[in-house]
Image 1 (cartoon, rainbow, N blue to C red):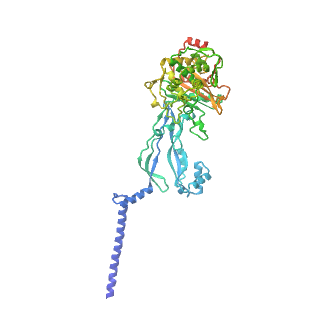
Image 2 (image 1 turned 180 degrees about the vertical axis):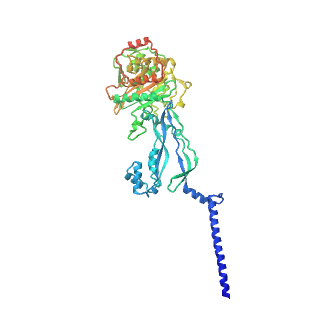
Amino acid sequence: MGAVKKQQQQPGIARWRFALVAGLLCLLAVALVVHLAGLQVLPEQDKGYRFLQDQGRARTIRTEEIAAYRGSIVDRNGELLAVSTPVQTIWANPQLLKEASAEELRALAAALGTAPARLAKRLEKYRNKGFMYLQRHMTPEAARKVLSLDLAGVYSKKEYRRFYPAGEVTAQLLGFTNIDDRGQEGLELAYEQSLAGESGKRQVVKDLKGRTVQDLAVKQEARPGRDLQLTIDMRLQYLAYRELKKAVAENGAASGFMVILDTHSGEVLAMANQPSFNPNNREGVKAAAMRNRALIDQFEPGSTIKPLTALAALETGRYQPHTPINTSPGYIRLPGKTLVDPVDYGQIDLTKVITKSSQVGITKVAMDLEPDALRELFYRLGLGEAVGSGFPGEAPGILPTRDRWHPIELANFAFGYGLTVNAVQLAQAYSVVANAGLKRPVSLILDQGKSRADAERVVEAGLARDVTAMLETVIGPGGTGKLAGVEGYRVAGKTGTVHKVGSDGYADNRYRSVFAGFVPAQDPRLAAVVVIDDPSHAKYYGGEVAAPVFGKVMTGAMRLLQVPPEQIAPAEQQLATQLDERGTTS
């Protein structure tokens, strides 16, 4: 009987145990669902939940950089000079890419345009790293071919590449950016902060292969860089570059540079250099070709300084344009050196001293001047100090000062030796004469161009006009700068032929040919300086080498700027014809 009761109790106990286990399993499932809901759906009320959620996001959500668009550079008329274009950069995680098969790596190398062996060598080099560039700055189409291989560990990102439409014509002025689109030279470097902009940030979801599958949010918008508008007029820039390149080639010169200023505003309208380079492809370019010689190179200006010495003489009140100066017997002895004219000009006036570029005549004038007065005038005209262009490496020039000037030092100073200038400084000094004694700040950036109200009077108007009249005779039949003439316009200017310094002092057979001037002489619009360095052919005088470049460029410039031709008085032409053509040198 007892055994029967025991057998009857066994099924009841089994059912109870089954129900208990089933209930526990259901509770466990419900708890699991609640837990998952807490992690994925319900409000974050538990620190543990938040930790796990953060860990999940950390494995799928990434913060990426949004590249900022670099500001464009344009000329005064809005023509593009530098612009950034979107490109794709391919990069890889070598830890993931090393799992690729040999066939996949060969296909990757082919898509990248590189040899499989070279790719393998680079992967070996970065095998312990988590990042490496495969190819920078690919076109979107080329990048798609790489990404279409769908290899684990291969990714792309958007970047920008700088492009210079004018190429070598503006290369030294603009400079260039590096592969990260950061300014390295020229105006790209000088205005890096405003051009570069500021990168942004965005959150994205990535899959197990590191590919972006969803954009979540932009945490910080990219701020594009500011555009930069230059004072340069590309019509004049192309013209100056073409004629300068031609002159350097024809004369076998080592280099050359030219700068053109707007006399009304002080704005730089053209700045050309030779030799040049292509900023879009700098492979094999020599450092010397990257130098903006018009602002960085400083040189002795030679005879182009003589009109400024004549201006200092006029300021004393003891000299007038027709004050006679005896240059006989064609040379003058100073302690340590004898200075010689090509012929004995005899007694000539101050104007003809400039017309003929008489070394003897200007030396006699200099000996009658106070050295400090001469230096002070040069400084007023802008020599010996930076023009404030903001260009990296701008040369301030050298304007010496001495407690006591020896006669030969003063004579050299008066005709352009013993001091150095850059081309923009010399052009600014001539612009002061062109502007009847008013000096205006020089500017490369259009927004910084100064108005007429910013002009500073540094020379009396009447004296500046007297010097202008002297400079006009240099371009006449008896002057040294006849080849700088511009048909239909009166031109004022001065030639210079400067001996270059060698290992043993001034070389007898190496020269720098210079011309400085402005046009139209009566109501000047443009002032310009041309320098041809080390011409190797038979011609080397400034009047033969540099002056023709000025004449050709200014002829085209007057047409491009639509400056009306002048009415040149017949009497002036007759006077120019009567000038003696003997012994023109500089």
